[in-house]
Length: 492
Image (cartoon, rainbow, N blue to C red; front, side, top):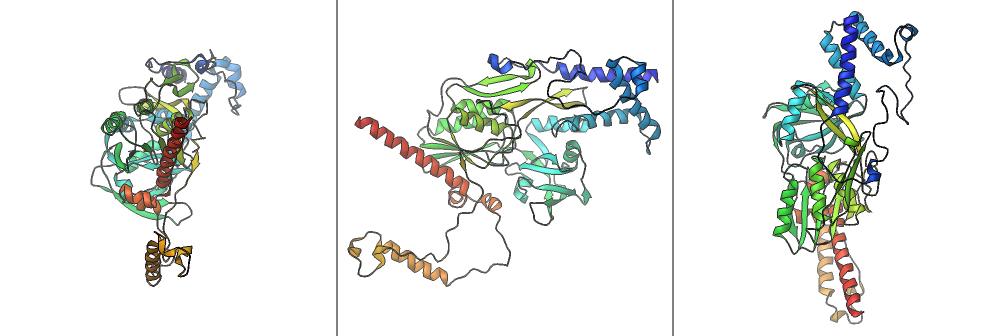
């Protein structure tokens, strides 16, 4: 018993020291206000910080009388360990019990803290290199099941029609209730060209099956093009090449009337890259701050002077699938009054995770801080609220739209002089023809706008995607307003 106790104590204090040590961060600019009250105030690791929830754990009296208060919880943990070892219905090794204890401890903290066993740690390393096998989704655990934060553009999941907010309840006919995030990733990933069947719960619709063939996931984070002299930059995720690719597009298109950054269904990526992209569009100012309990985990990031786009009108598109890194970008551009945000409130993933290796093969992922926008707004659970609310909607011109205007009347004054009479007459003729051609459609059949948009060209999307149409309209409005202001200034 004594040997086990000392092992447990060594393990407990050993893990604590690793978490507390972490890795040394790179030097960043910081305001004094950013680090105020962030340092760790407790000398005793068991002491609760202000605002912590009161612990309901009751230590048995015999333990209280036996050892000092600093050892109460460590001995109680060892007691539970021994009970599992001797009483649990299935025999487990001490290694298995310890591993499960660490995993349970971390997953109970929040949805993003977790224990990475050898398989999960290897998968994480592969993922950060930008190429890995799987479906191409960012997930979290919600309601005991696998929740899709967002599918990554042009991946098997994206092409199969997986949507942000989908709930995976079965994988290959096996219920996934109660899985950890690492177990979920393990179930979804597999060898390329192998198939996996998912049962999806989407909103209030009945669960349905989707079969997806796994593939090597090669992420192209940036797709950019122009339409009517407005730049459209789609950022699907933030990887090591994101800021480089955006800079290249801007240098090749120096005379744009405006820019649209589409961050919808972007599940995150590298913090450094979201900062670097923010820096492209800002002329100084704070980008984001991270605040944790220690000074080491509390940082502030600032933009350099010099906006590479020379202040041209900028609109950012977000939705409920916009999470983490893109929320930092949207918050930085909004708070620095550099862009107008259009769309729906973002996901609200504003916590910072640090991967701390425990050995060459295992690690823990621990939440150590939260992200704050330049104005001091915490992104966690709040998300970024757009300046112009615009949810998904299909823009559809109604069939058979017959219009009556003044020039339509035969005896209208100056009708023959109207430049628009022939146009109106042609439109009305087309409307009459369309009224006589009703399209066959199954009862109850609904068009899924988001899935339709994925197959359209940019020009076609602007005509149908309400959020994107709003973004282009906003760019046009800013441009016209600036021209009015310029003319007024010239007259003065």
